[in-house]
Image (cartoon, rainbow over all chains, first blue to last red):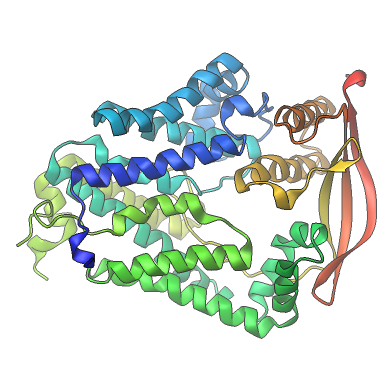
Length: 272
Length: 156
């Protein structure tokens, strides 16, 4: 099958986006980390970002995490809204999916005291479906694509401008701190031997870091042309695999943004 | 490329609202990059871009329920974040005197509830241990183990 033959229209893009969002939410459910599964966590953290501060002051996070019925109803909404979108194609369910996912994302970050970004991909990919007008949809879909490019290209630029990519032993130092739980619990595993090898050979791990930075920087090409989006999709897959093999991080939630790299039907883009 | 083919130009002529929203996001992102301090929903993606240095020692935490370890490595990512990121954060806050004893016990009670509710381990007590570790030949060695807290259902 030719790459250009798998172009997306509004409907198939919706299938891909909300299908992936549903998988992300179900994975959270299976991981016992939806609000009703959190067993009434205390919210002990001071927030400094004003949107988080406002949300906390509204009482909504306490109301949802401290009341099982409310939390359960919210979780049902979180799972049901992408399902309902897939079944009905109704715009309102796209809006509810985005808002409920954003609220879940923020409350989860409030509970753990760290603002992770993992779910952002799933949130951003739902935004284009707030409209049913195809020209607006196509532009928002392209906007989501630009956001994906920004995520990766900026990650490379931060490492370059902060000098960390030139810093000897950078990846080894990251791995020492980041993999220590795994290494203490599984000293004898093959994966531990692999990490120990990277720690003992900082030049190899630095080379891997360079591969990662170049891979991320490659996404900057997407700002100029869509011609290489198939290559970017491949780079995306490579990033996910490398991230898992080296860092032990499963970037599945970020993968929710992958559908935006599939070509949109040119009629939608209003191009000749 | 002609100006009329650019994304922002087409956005402007399709929807003024969308154009303003995207422009605001771009300006806010540039401002946030300059300040290097993000404000939701304007996010920065450094992905481990700060310079990292090896430490002489590392402290990690072990959660024991009924003598069995809640294994970090066997948990899905979001559950690791929920249990261990929260634990590390709350311990740091307690060390800095930012939370009261009551808040600390509320946290322990929650950790107990979560660990048992999630059916990770069904036992009436949990113990949190702090492990000091040092790297030797690419692998960490535990050099000391100290009980940080013990929570029993009957006590509270």
